[in-house]
Length: 577
Image 1 (cartoon, one colour):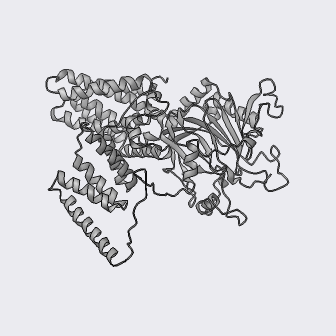
Image 2 (tube, rainbow, N blue to C red):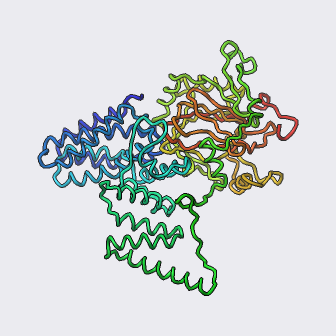
Image 3 (cartoon, rainbow, N blue to C red):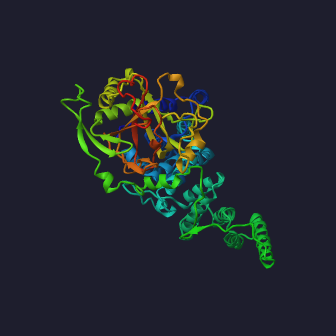
C-alpha cells in the first residue's frame, strides 16, 4: 500500500493558507494560479499517477463538509453528495492502487472529477461561500479533462473487446481478481454510449445504449430518459445497417414522445427506404444494402487497422498459445552465472526458458521489493505520456495503441539505478555503455501497447516473406527512417524487460507471430534478442503489451544496442544465426 505523496501534502497546506486570506486577495491569487500552474491531463494513461486524484477527491470532500456546517439547513442536497463521496474516498484512500486496479473504479473517478464535481460547483454558486469554491477552484487546476474521461471510457471498451466481456459484466463490476466492487449506473452506461457515438463508433454505441436501456427498464433511477437512450440507439442501429430494427426502436421512441421531430423525420425516412427495397424485390433488382452480421444477438465487431487483431487479443486471453508438448520438452530451468561472470559465480540467477525459438528467457529475483519501490518513487514525478515514432516522419507522437506513461532514469539519479543497470549487464553479457537509459512505464486504465517491433526496420527486402502478418509489417514500416541513426550506437540488439508488479488480470506480453504469452511476475525479468547475429531484424519478435484488465502494471526496460557488443555477441555464419 502506497503512502500519501509528500508533494500532495504540501499542496494541501498551501490550499489551507489560501483559504484564510481575504476575498480580494484570494481572487487575485486564484487569477495568478490559473495563469501559471500547468494543467495536467491524460491521467487515465497511468494508474500510478491517478492515485493523486484519490487524495485530491478526499480533500474536496473535507472542504465540502466544512461548507455544509455553515449552511446545512439550506444545502441538504449538497450534504447528501458529500456523504456519498466520503464513503467512496474513505475506501479508495485506504488502498489507492488496489482500489484503482478495478477499471470501473478508475473510470468513475475520472468521470466524477471531470463532470460531476463541476456540476456541483454550479449548484454551490447559487448561494456560495468562499471556502469551498476556493478549494474546488484550486484543486480543479489538477483535475482530469474531457480527454481523460473520453480516454477512460474508450479504455473500458478496449477491455470489453479484448477480453470478450459483455456490457452487463462490466456494468456490474464482476471482474476477476478485484478487491473492490463497483458498478455503472444508467447515466454511466449512457455516457459510455455517447462517447462511442461522438467518435463515430456505432458498434459500441449500440452495446452501451442497450445496457443503459436494460437498466432503465429494470427500474433504476436515472436523470436520463428512455427517449434519450432510444434516440441514440435507433440511429446507431441504423448506421450498422439494421434498418428494420432501427424502425422498431424509432417507433418506440415516437410512442414515448410524439413531438420528437427528429424521430418522426427518421421514421418517415426509414419507411421510404423499406418501401424502396420492397419495390426492388418485386422487380427482381439486387439490393445495395447488406444486412449486418449478428452472433448471439450481438452485432459483429467491425474490422480495424490491425490485421492480427484476433490472434493478438486471443493470446491476451490465454487462447491460441502454441506451447506444444514437444516444445515444452525443449524448455529448461537452470542457474545462470553469465558465462562465469565474477559477480554471479557465488549468487547466480535462476533462469527459465519461456520459448525456444526465438529464445526467450525469464530471470527470477532480479529486483528486490525495496529496489522496485525506489525506482517507482524516482519515476513517478517524471511520468509523461508514452510516445511512438511516426514511421513516415520519425517524429515522436502519442498514439491510441500505446496507453501508458513512462520516464527515463539516469545512473546519477540514484545509486539504485546504476546497480540495476550493472546487474542487467552481468546477466546478459552485453554492455550498458551504449544502451538506452532505464525506461520505467506505468500502464493506465486498460493500458496497452499493441503489436510492435523494438528494433528499427530497414528498407523493404524482397526476400522477406509477405503473406499474413509480414505484409502488414511491410505496409506499415517500409518508409520508416532509421530511428536510431542519430544515436550512433546501431540498432536495438536486445530487450531486457523487468516486471515491477504483479497484475491480477490481463497485462501479458504476447508474441502474435509464434503464439507466445508471458505473464507478469513481480521481481522477474524476460530477455530476448531483437536481431540475428548478422544484424538483420528478427521479425518474429513483434510483440505487444496486453491491456491491463485488473491491477496496476509497472515495468522497466533496458534496450541494448549493437555498438560495443560486436565482440560480446559476434556475427554468426549465416544471416539467421
